[in-house]
Amino acid sequence: MTDASTDRELQDLYFSIYDEREAAGFILPSNIFKKDHIPLLQSALVNNMVLNCRDELDQFIEGNVILLLLY
Image (cartoon, one colour):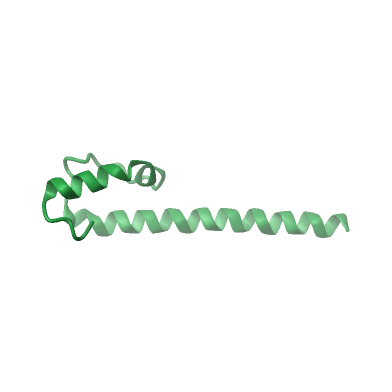
């Protein structure tokens, strides 16, 4: 995104990751999105990935605890 040469190109790229940004809670209309918003978007996407990994890790640990209790 940082390599986009025009606002329109940037907005098209932004629009193309709709599912990812929606999952991260970053809802900003495509026609408003500018290069100044990129750090905020990156933070939201990284935060969402970390939280998802944390949830998966918690599920993994919980599953292992249950297995240990069964044996």
